[in-house]
Image 1 (cartoon, rainbow, N blue to C red):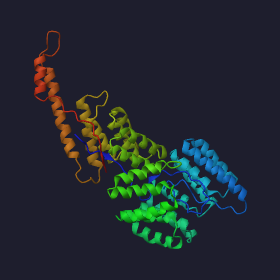
Image 2 (cartoon, one colour):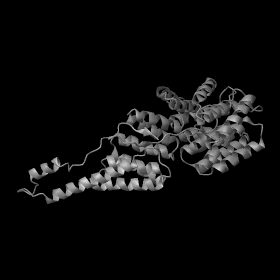
Image 3 (tube, helix red, strand yellow):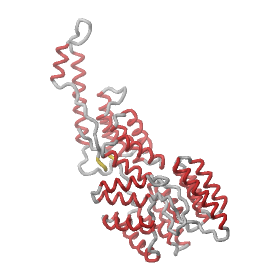
Length: 438
């Protein structure tokens, strides 16, 4: 029986504000605008240090070395290079920002905020750091505080496009698409090649359901910044909404192949595409990479559990999903997927009745915490199925106890065969070859 599992996609309306997974950034020789924090851009506007250009070159070189080390997984080596870059030039905001990125990768929110604040000390209008701090506030449940912080920074320099883009990133995460459209257009009137404004505008149009328009804007942005994974991630989601799944997959695969890889959200969403295609091992790898970018990413952890279940690694799936539930005890998605696992999976060391009763318990908790349910939620059907199978298993056990014993203490063969003919053996559900996105 195919189960409707809950695979969690990240919408990427504003990936910095609330979704995490930032990438280290490096300097470029072009004057392209700085990427908004959280969008996974691996290139950032070059720091201008007119007084000491020789230090600028040295710092930029160290920054690039750090980016390469981060891409190869050498986090401590990358951190050292970024610190060296900051030491070479105290105004090098990108170096402090990248240190904050590494702190986030390792789940250290306080350290990340301190580094982002250092970036703002180095350059007060450094928009990526503003968006990054706002992201931390939103993830902590303080969206109004995040917006107040971003707007407060903009009030200090109201002509700064970088800070306006940071404010719009936060607004977009809060669903204020109309405001973002209006303000992003104003930024683009002042700077028609502002990639940050294009990114926000495309996200706002996608939020409004204008996916063709979002694709057109993102196409123009990618022509200016072809190695920005966040643009590819948003392009993929627009293609998905338009029913263009091959194009979406191609965009996501291109994003993760970029220098430094992509954001946690992009790895997660590509994992969903692989999972839907039945490539559970490939999906597992991508969900693990998402968690390496953002250790606290609950959707990726739940999706990882489902990818393990798809490979019949039931014990591992159980451990991962229970970790997700421990991380968020009232997560309806974790409870739902645990219920499915115990309904279908063969959990080592558990008898069928105990396993099915555990499935019922998870489904009951799910019904208690789910504030709203998707249309066609099949949980009632699964509860009825579990109860029926418990009855069958209980009847089977009773029949086994009552069956006459053979000469050597074994059950009489005829009675066992009769029990099988009566349908006493429980139906074993096959492993779901796919899964449906929430």
